Length: 199
Image (cartoon, rainbow, N blue to C red):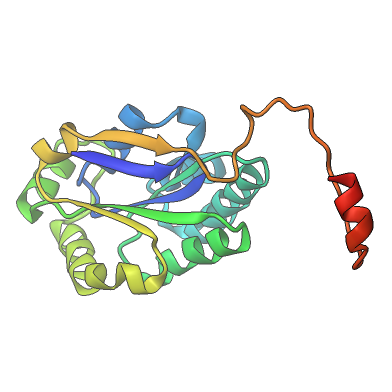
C-alpha cells in the first residue's frame, strides 16, 4: 500500500496507545520531523507518562510545529489524537500555515494495543485507557474529512502498517529546479501597451 502526502504538510498520527504510531514514525520519517507528545512531557517533567504536564507539553509541541512549518519543513505530530478537540488544533495550525493536513489512522484491534502496552515497562496504566482511546477513535473516524483533513489513510492490521510505502509528492508551487534567467514584471496598473512592449 502506498501513502501519498505533499512534500510540505502537517501529518497527524492517530490511534490508541500501543497501536504502533511511534514505531511507524521512526521507520518512515526523519527524527527531526516527528514531534512526539511523550517526549515533550519528558522534556518538561523528566517523565514522559506525567499527564499533569500535558497542557505545557502540547503548547511546546505546537510552538515547535509552527516554527518548522514557518521554515517549510514537513511536520508529524505523534500523539493519540483520538478526540476531535485534539485534532482541531492540528487543523487550525495547518490552515494558519496554508499547508494540507494529512491523517494516518491506526485503527488496530483492541487486544493488540492492550498486549503491546503490557510489554512496555513505561506504560503502567489500566486497559480501560486503551479501550477509551479506541472508543473515541471509533466515534469520530468517519468525520476526519469533514474536520479538514485532505489526505486520510486508515491502517487496520499490523501487516498493513508494515508494508506501507510513503511517497512525498512535489508541490505545484515548487519551482526549485527552474534556474532561469527570469524576467519578472510587477504591477502594470492597466498599462497594456507597455506590457506588450516588455513581453
